[in-house]
Amino acid sequence: MQYDRIKDILAKEPLNEKIEIRGWLRTRRDAKDFSFLELNDGSCLANLQIIASSDLGNYQDVIVKLHTGCSLKVTGELKESPAKGQKIELHAEEIDIYGWADPEIYPLQKKRHSYEFLRTIAHLRPRTNSLGAIARIRSSLSFSVHQFFHTHGFVYVHTPIITTIDCEGAGEMFKVVAPEDVLNDISGIQSNADFFGKPANLTVSGQLQAEVYAMALGKVYTFGPTFRAENSNTSRHLAEFWMVEPEMAFYDLADNMNLAESFLKYLVRHTLENDSEDLHLFANFVDKNLYRKLQNILEEPFSRITYTEAIKLLQKSPQKFDFPVEWGTDLQAEHERYLCEEIFDRPLFVTDYPRDIKPFYMRINDDNATVAAMDLLLPGIGEIIGGSQREERYDVLVSRMQEMHLNLDEYNWYLDLRRYGTVIHSGFGLGFERFLQFITAMKNIREVIPFPRTPGSALY
Ligand code: 4AD
Ligand code: MG
Figure 1 (cartoon, rainbow, N blue to C red):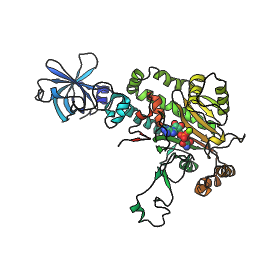
Figure 2: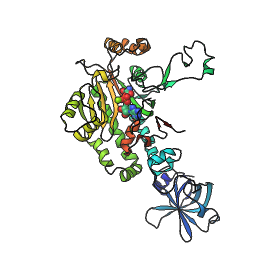
Figure 3: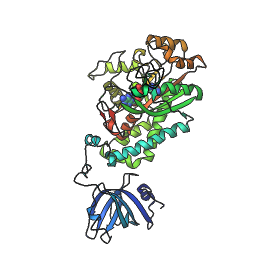
Figure 4: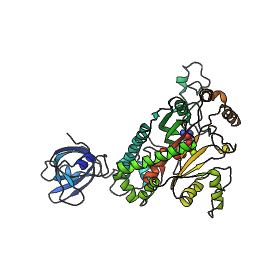
C-alpha cells in the first residue's frame, strides 16, 4: 500500500486510489443512509473523514456503535468531498474494528479537558489534539537540534547519565545505589551503597564530560536527559529534563552568545517551516500572539547587557519586587522577566555575573569580581540558556576550586585538560522543555515532556 499515514494522504490527495488506513476514531455522526467517521492516526493534527455507508455489511452491528477512542482499519477509495471543511474523504468499502473503547468509562470524552486532569492520565493524553501536537513538535525540534549541529561541524557525544562528579556544584544530585545482595558479591566496595567503588549520581549536566571531547574534537554537543533533586514545584522546573549542551574549543564568550543566538533562530525558523499545522493550534487556542513572539526572535538581534547594568536598571525601575535587588545576589525569575519583558521586550543575554554565585568552571574576568557567564532570558519564560566561557588557566582554576572546597583529586582529569594543551573554550546548556514552552505557549512545563517527574509525582 503506497499511503499508510493520514498526513501523506492529506498532502498528496491520491484521488480514486485504493487506500487502507488504521487509526483511532475521534467522532461519529450519523446521517440518513451513512455515517461520518473522523479518523486520526497521530501522524498529523487533521483527521481523515470516512464515509461509512449503511450498505456496509457490519453497519448495524458495528459502525453505529463506534465511539471516540475505538481503533479501526478502513479500506476504501479516496474521493473529493462535496461538503465544506475537508477537501477529500475516504469512501469505505470495509471497516474492521481492532478494539472498542467503552464510552461509559473512557476518560477522554469529546469535551475539552483541563491540562491538570490530563496529567493524571498521562498514558492517554497524547491522544488529545494539543498533547499530540506537542509530541510531534518535540520530535521535530529534536531533529532540528541535530541538524543544526551536524551542518555546523559539531560531533554528537553521548555523555554519561551516571556520574561521579557534580558539575554545577549545587548538591542537587540524585544518588544511584545498588541493591545490597548485588553489592555483597563485589569485592573492594567502600560502603554498602557503592556499586562503582565510590558514590555515584544521576547527572545534572553533561558539560564537564563534553569539555573532554571538545578538547579533542573541537566542537561537540550532547543532548540528553539531566536530573535535579531540587524541591522546586514551579511551572518551569522538572526533576528530569532534557538539555542541549554544545561545547566549543577556541570560542570566547561573544562567540558563545553568537552561536546560541543563531541556534535559537534556526530552531524557530525550522519549527515555523515544518510544524505549521501543529503550531497553528497553539496560536489559535493558547496564545494569539504566538506568531508575533516567534517572529520577534527571528527579526531582531538579541539584546546584551552585563549583570551589573541589569542590577542598575532594576534598581532604577518603579517596579516593586518580592526579592530585593542588590549587586551580588542572583536574579530571581521576577527580575529576569521584568528585564526582558518590560525593559527590552525581546531575548536578552545577561553576562558577567558575580563569581560568588556561579560554578567553579566559569572563567574569572579581569575585574576579579565577575565571571564570563551568560544567561539568555526569553519573554514569558525567563532563563532558557545558561552558559559561560570556561576557566582554561590551570593556576586560576585550581585556586578557585580550593576556594570552593572542591576535592582536587576528584577533578584531576578535568585539570589535565588545562595541563596539556589548554585552550580558551566555551559552551552553554539550553533547557529543551523551557524552549518547548516558549514555542507552544504552554503555561506549565509538565505539558511539554511526555512523562513529567516533579517532587511528589512520577507516574509510570
Ligand atoms: O543554567 P544551568 O544549570 O546550566 C548548566 O547546567 C551548564 N552546565 C550548562 C552548560 O554550560 N553546558 O542549566 C541550563 C538550562 C537552564 O537555563 C534552564 O533552561 C534549564 O537548563 N534548566 C531546567 N529546566 C527544567 N527544569 C529544571 N529543573 C531546570 N534546571 C535548569
Ligand atoms: Mg542557570
